[in-house]
Image (cartoon, rainbow, N blue to C red; front, side):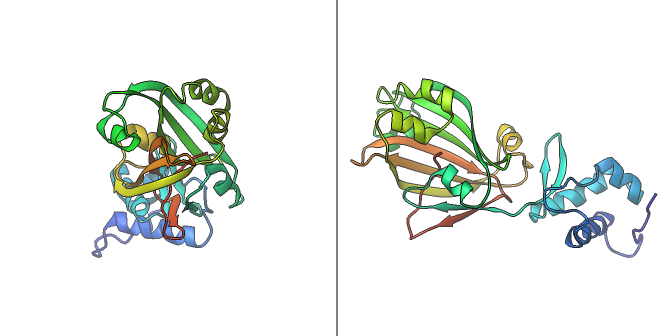
Amino acid sequence: MERSLARGEGVALWRQIAQALEQAIARGEHPPGSRLPTEAALSARHGVNRHTVRRALDSLALRGLIRIEQGRGSFVAEDVVDYRLSPRTRFSELIRAQNREPEGRILWLREVPAEPVVAEALRLRPGRPVLAVERLGLADGRPVVLGRHHFLLPRFAELKKILAGTGSITEGLTRCGVPDYRRAWTRLTATLPDAEEAELLQQARTRPVMCAEALTVDPEGRPIDFTLSRYAAGRVQIVIEGGTQDGQQA
C-alpha cells in the first residue's frame, strides 16, 4: 500500500492526490484516452477514503484533464475536436477532416407539437406537429454532440423512415429533395446537462455543456430544421469561421 501523502502539513489530501495524478499524466504514465485506476484502488494506494479520492478526480475533471464517465470510470482527456461552424458545416466531413471516424446514432424519432421556440424559428403556430429527431454524433466512438432536430411536416414526412434506415440527416434531406442547405443563424450558450444528457455524452453532470440553437434553411431561405445541440465539454472546441455561425448536421 502506497502512503506517500504529506499529512498535517497544510495541503489537503485530495489536492495532493490530484497533483500526483496530474504529474503522472504529464509524464505519460497515463496516455490520452486511458482509464485511470478506480476510486477503490486509489483509496487503497493512498490510505484515504473514497470521498477524498472523488474530490481529487472531480477537480481534475473540472480543469479538463480527465473525463468522468458514469458507470465506467475516469479517463485521461484526449485531444479536443475542433468543431468548425460555417454556413455549410457537415458533421461527418468535419470529423473525417481531423482523421477521426464519424458515427451518427439516431436515438429516437417521433412527431411532437412544436414548442414556442421551435414554432417561432420554423415560422409555425405553436402546437403544430413537427418531426423531432434525437441524434448522437461520435468521433472515434466517443460522443461529441447530442442534437435534437425539428423538421417541418408534412414536407419531411418521409424523413422518419429514411433516417431509421440510414442515420444520415444529409442523405435523408437529399432523398427528400433538399440536396443543399445552410444555417441561417446559431445562438451559443452554456448550461449544465441533465442526467440523461450527461450519460449520453459520457461526462459529469457538474461539467457544463455548450449549447447551440440553430436554424437550417433551404436554398430559397425557407426553414427546414431547428436544432438544439449539446456539445461534450472537454472534447469539443467550437471554432467560428468567417464571422458566420452555424450548427450541426450529418
